[in-house]
Image (cartoon, rainbow, N blue to C red; front, side, top):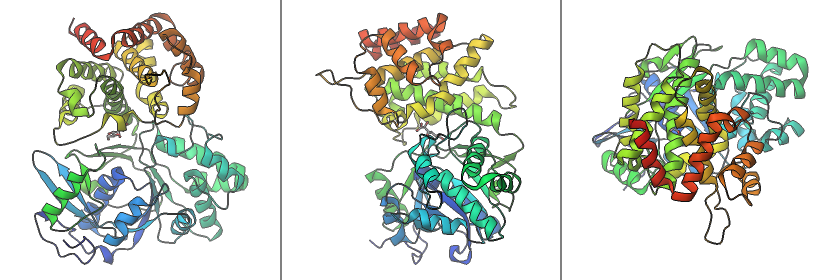
Length: 489
Ligand code: CS2
């Protein structure tokens, strides 16, 4: 079977780009070319290019590894996006012009960001990719931030790259850029702006920081599309629908949402024609998505991992567990203000998306990087729930599930490894802990942004200890049944 490429002749049962990709120049450099970017920003950009044209194709940068580049380069950046609804549908995306990866990716990305045609730098680098603390300061202990502060002219991390690119543009007399964070951080644009300005002040002084502050833009965004890791079935279905072999095909769900603060300094693609919503204030949407979708996701990922459920859909197939997802969604909804969205309908839609039988979204994938995810997903709404008197029990259960996940041990008593930038510190802190109270105290000392005193003391702290002790003594399945019974009262 012929490999997908720019030469591939449209056919099969797939949608092909409704424009000639090679006629369009690059306007965007995208950092972090994972499945999510390929299912989201690139799909919206593809639709915008077809609808309105413009020089808005994307140079993608893989900062970690070369596998994505190796699969996409022989295909001239083309790939199949599979939408897994009742029946799968396929669409070939043409918006990706080039992929940068490997040891020179930093230098090449910098050159691409300093090209006169580049107007937007967008990012999907995951929460841990930035080097920003959960309260929005530059994290000087982050490995890439540390390296880039020492050598700002040869940056390897995203903040260093953005500052170096903006500094170079300023020296060359070029316009600044819009920097568009598309990760699940609260106030993602605002936080990235503050960290970039702090870095610029340190490395280029007040002049550079002042220029960036007045010329560059950092809109906040809310992004949403459930995008599991691709499997062998992904490639097989893609080939069946397009007639071409594709080693870079991506699986995603039918639903997609993008809410963007309308604050760009040098234009933007017509992403609204693909369904993106441009608004003045993203914060309420961001909170809704982080607390409802992502909060419930984290809860069900840890509790799912501990009750033998490999995929999100398996959690939803267990009525007791699904009831806990529902009560988490309701508790999260009760903390939200300032939205004219029907949150009951949103919760129903989320439950249906989680249950999608065609999406194999691994609970292990969502369980990664808990230290980076839980502050905005669980702790922030828990603190608000306590302050305003709305339901808080689901948060105690979610935090207990995370702690119990961290405490999983081999038969010989060693802790099982977890995938988290703080894994080593967590393992050291928990190595000798056996009970709920000592484990909570150890993690609270290490992660006060997840377990601040308000969540370890009082009635909430008691509920947290109680849930964790029970999970440790009786197992997750028993606690799910007990919690589900409580939610029905
Ligand atoms: C998930 C998200 O992996 C995770 O932590 O909660 O990736 C989630 O699938 C997306 O935010 C959905 O838009």
